[in-house]
Image 1 (cartoon, helix red, strand yellow):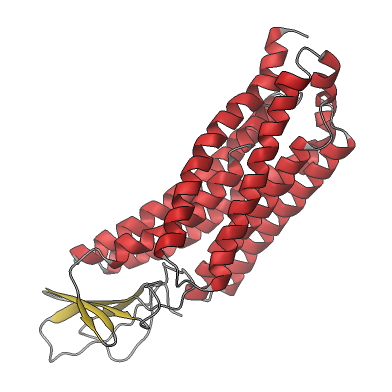
Image 2 (cartoon, rainbow, N blue to C red):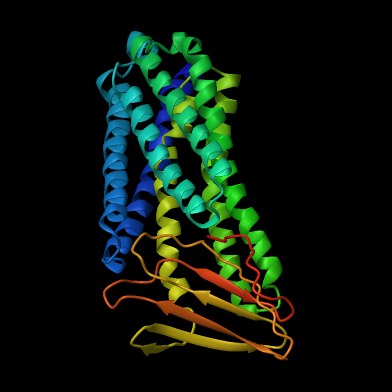
Length: 344
């Protein structure tokens, strides 16, 4: 076996574990931050984070074992390098599938909760289910034919997996960005509102495009060279990227909640500023679900009012931390009409 062949079979997996280790360290840091600062989150959400972290730990250990078998236990064994092993790569594929569907379901639920757009939410969910089916089929094919030379046999399920995964991730990000774009157009004259929405947009872009970029890169590598482990090395980081996407959406709440001075009352936290022509009310209710991006826009026009006040309120129970964001837009020329991007 030539040196270049070893690079694409063993070297790709080794480099993948290096990148995976860096992301896993960041994941541990973010998970620790979450469990320390959001102890009053709903138990289902905390369980979701714990399960994702546990699965990523199992996947990372399996990745290390795979590289150890290739580089130490069977070093210089051309038969093993070609035939591979029955369990490390399938384990990686199945664990990645589980983490992906957990995080995608979390984001889709958050989108549906605030838009009530069942059609879009179901479309995104079916894409996520299709990606899960393709991933599981790829894992089964790797068990039946672990040889590098037989990777072409799982070409169809791998294409389904990587294609639907990328489309689902981009679709979720695009759906959230569309709603945030409309909200920014309404609140462009309010500096604090824009700052808040800019942070939400930045997180949505980063979390949506990161996973999609990895899946597209893995798909391109698979199509260009099917008889290699380069796609596997790229997807070594995919599960960690998904979990970091979820943690980024959860951990941003602290900086959002305490970004300005506030006064504590028996019903929550109030913050205010005055704008010349429009009123925007942000409400940060606290239900322990970790949802952050729901924005309700309610136009309310009163011709007798020349200016309006934008206030920031948090209606929270004493033992729960801020979770959601609700924006109420008050225009001064319409009567009791309700519309807007995140209308519940």
